[in-house]
Length: 34
Image (tube, rainbow, N blue to C red; front, side, top):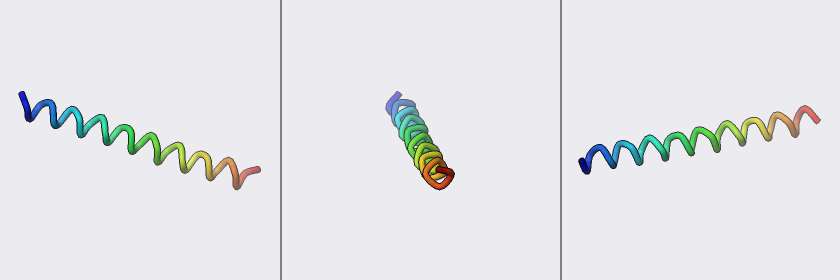
């Protein structure tokens, strides 16, 4: 059960990192576009 919790936490952390990266790229693209 501990391993499952660690994997789930890693999945959440990975999703948050992906969202931050996507938002950063989108923000930079919007700034360049304007």
